[in-house]
Structure formats: C-alpha cells, structure tokens
Length: 141
Ligand SMILES: [Zn+2]
Ligand SMILES: [Zn+2]
Image (cartoon, rainbow, N blue to C red; front, top):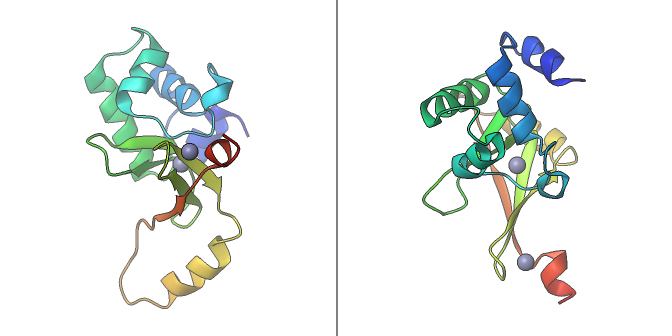
C-alpha cells in the first residue's frame, strides 16, 4: 500500500505535506532508521526545511488521531513517532544498555491484546506494549 492509499483509507486527504511526513516516518530517506521511532526534531531534520515545526506537529497529531501513526514515550522529554496501525498493532523494544528504541512487528501480540481489549467495559484507544532488555547490537558487542 502506498502512502496516499494509507492516508485515504484512514479518512485523511493526502496533501503534499502529509505525504512528506509519512515518508519521513517510514524512513524512506534514511533506510537505516526505518525501524526506529523518531522525535519531531529528527523528523524535522529529515524534512530539511520543507516544513515548519507547527505544521509538523499538527500533521503528527492528525496522523495519531486517525491511527496512521503511533506516538510513544520512551521516558525521554520528547515523544517519538512511527508508523503504526490499529490499537494493538504496535509495540516497542527498549534497550537498557544503549537506550535505543526499536519498533517491533507485533502482529503476534495482536490476537491476545484484542481479546483483552474486547473484554473491557471502556473504549480503549491506545495500548502500548514496551519490552525492555538488551538489544541484538549490544548482545554482540
Ligand atoms: Zn542496545
Ligand atoms: Zn514504533
């Protein structure tokens, strides 16, 4: 699915700026960071002057609200953003040694989480699973 389709499926019209943000989130310009949730500052650096901060924040809020992107707090001052769909569709791994956070493919978690969520009386709009430990890079260092 391309970026335009993804936006439209979530009821967001695909403006040029939104497509730029989506592209930055997907790490298309920097393949090596594709698995890492990014702070707004890192996204701004990727957008290299093509967008101001206010516009970026507004778009990020919209993308999170529509479930296109996930916002998550790794215990730092800034939130980090990454692409992620669905309430239960996303989880992270945080390395306690180097401090890096990676996005995990959490499709395996989803069935169990969905079952838990559907049994709750409240409407859950976000669920965040963060695993902690030592990452592959640090294990091999
Ligand atoms: Zn590590
Ligand atoms: Zn993520």
